Amino acid sequence: MSNKPINIAIVGLGFGAEFIPIYQKHPDANMYAICQRNTEKLEEIGNAFGIEKRYTDFDELLKDPEVDAVHINTPIQNHAEQSIAALRAGKHVACTVPMATSVEDCKRIVDAVKETGLTYMMMETVVYSREFLFVKELYENGELGKIQFLRGSHQQEMGGWPGYWEGLPPMHYATHCVSPVLALPKASAEYVSCFGSGRIDENLIPKYGSPFAIETCHIKLKDSDLSAEVTRSLFNTARQYRESFDVYGSKKSFEWTLIEHEDSVIHTGESPERVKIKDYAHLLPTEIQEFTTESVYDLEGHQHLSFIQGSGHGGSHPHLVHEFVSSLSKNRQPYPNAVEAANITCVGILAHESAMKGGEIMHLPEFTFS
Image (cartoon, rainbow, N blue to C red; front, side, top):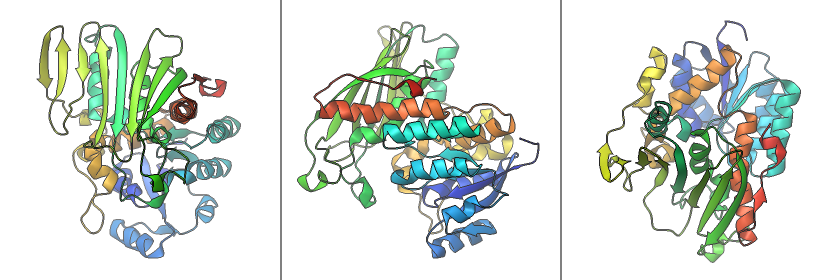
């Protein structure tokens, strides 16, 4: 792209509003437009942040030739169709997780990216959290030694969330625990085997036909001697919110804290020690560094529920914005791009399919590797 600021349009202003001031302060972005079906909320947000271009219709937004890229923050069932529509309209796409809810839709997005030559990035928070950046630094500095095993978990009570979440198969929203175990070794998943356990309330089952309270998946990494394990729960499981990963190395191992806001642990042989994880704002342009530790409040002074339960998503939001914007301005691939996002997302989709088949091994499709 040229040196002019990239015109960004944010679609969906619940969680999406968290990103508005970050784009407004990013030196290479112009927070150009917002889109929300609810007119009252659209006007409220637009007035609060001083955004003139406002749309209630996504298709109308896509007709605007001034829009360079869209950042999609809509309900998960809309992600695939809106991502594909935006790419077909000539817009670059950043989309909140998951990429899609079917293998077929993941492939459609990958195909659309290849056909258009445009950029797609899945805005996965965990791989830009300060915890992940800390472990990545340890690994790249050689302090962990050889990685021997990885584990991720994402346990969350979804009661009180919008109705489309009710009864969702746990692994259909598994990117937060799958992404770190693939991103750290820079690997793809080759095949998975998953077991379901327990049972959710009977009234929650019919919408998706998924009975399991917890799903636990083993992942074989492609072209590697490594495997990983991830655990996911959404309903009827007593557990404080936990979005975590553990890494076991030959020299040092990292284990996420069991209780939120306590310190994580580094193991060196038989000598564990608690560790204070630093912030990684220094990796960002000065203009947006403040957003690693400061949240963006909605107009009533309350944070979006995902931000509260996720403990601020580990300061990841400005890192996500910078990765997307800089990938466009420097004409490079972001992480995760369409193929990488498809691999991460399809792990969860196929894991649930495996669980419904009693743990049958499911291979990732070829389009998620190349």
